[in-house]
Length: 124
Image (tube, rainbow, N blue to C red):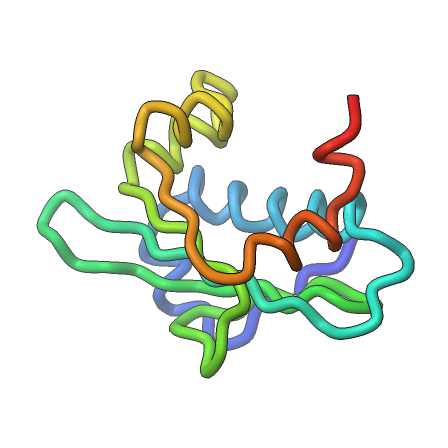
């Protein structure tokens, strides 16, 4: 398991559920990413707190998956959601598909690159 958290102040303030969620996310991204990824893919996550503050972190996926706090200089894909939704997804009480269909999880950017990077997500 690779955990490369740099400057984790923001992530650590989110609480243990969220730290686990980010760690699990990082490992799952690496597990499901195409082994033929030519270029690194940067995925930005923007999590809105109940007070309106946005906590950001991003994953850079290539030969490894690394997670960083803060905003990426240039994200390929951006997921936006509130903190409650992130926790529900992490706990398995809500799937990402359900969250997306209910408008709780928003996706923007180069969606085609995301699909190419994770072909197993689109295959049943």
